[in-house]
Amino acid sequence: MQANFERDLLAQLTQRWSKRVAVKKDELDLDGHFDASLPDFPEHLVPVLALPGAEKLDRDARERILSAAWIAYNAKTKAIEDEIILPACRLMLQDRIPVRRDDVAVDALHQTIIDEHYHILMCHNAVAVTRRRRDMADVRFAPSIWSVVQGRETARAGLSGFDRDIVDIAFSLAAETTISGFLSTLSTAQDIQPMNRITTDMHRRDESGHAVVFRELCGSLYRNLDSGQQQMFREALMEGLTAFRLPDPESWAAVAAQGGFEIGTEQLLEQAETGPAPKRDNGPLNLLLDDLGISRDLVME
Image 1 (cartoon, rainbow, N blue to C red):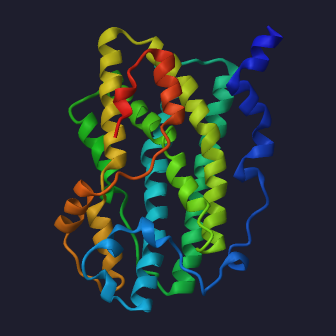
Image 2 (tube, rainbow, N blue to C red):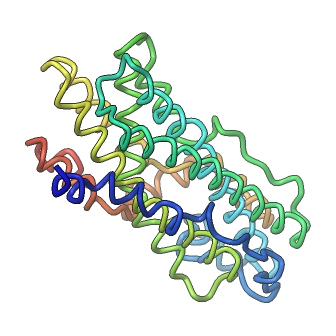
């Protein structure tokens, strides 16, 4: 029994929670890690700067676009945490959802909920510094603007009860098991704001644990579904993975406008069709798919 407990990934995570997560660390001195001479976001992650005409932008315009991109990144992160991840965590605490429900699993979910709320606060605080230091108080993005939030609403349209729950949890699995690749790219960018790089790295470290939590719990859910429900889960997972790879043309057009660069959403959609997909780390998800006997073709680009 003890050996099984020691091999339990969730048990290992919950035991180490107080030592590994951002919420248990000292507060970061955000202003102390702000260097006004450095850009707020990597240029190669801003698709509008690869569009025709961007080469004519002066330095101030480009820097405002990069600052707006950082604000947009945090707004999207907050929307994903608040609209997709947290509701799924609360669902999996409900008795009607057939997931693993021992004390360790419940602890892991509550710890994840605390982590995600803290990530929202981290994003809020970091953006507050950027708005103040860059004079961008009015740059804001509604949660409904993001393609992944819209995709989840489309996927659950007309559904109710347990069917809707399946879709919500599948979307959260898509988020928590594939986000690390993008976070790693941003958290290792040495030529941007130290504040931005460090806060992203703190988020990334937490998400590596969340990938395990969602892999374990969603795996237990899937095994308890009947064949029709499993098919619904697979389809919703596919829709979630697709939604996370979609461009966000409205938000990027708004980002470009901060630098006086007027572009149309159709330009961004055309660019997304011909350019590479956003970097995602499918490793944690692939482990679950292999364990459940689901083809990896589900996550192919």
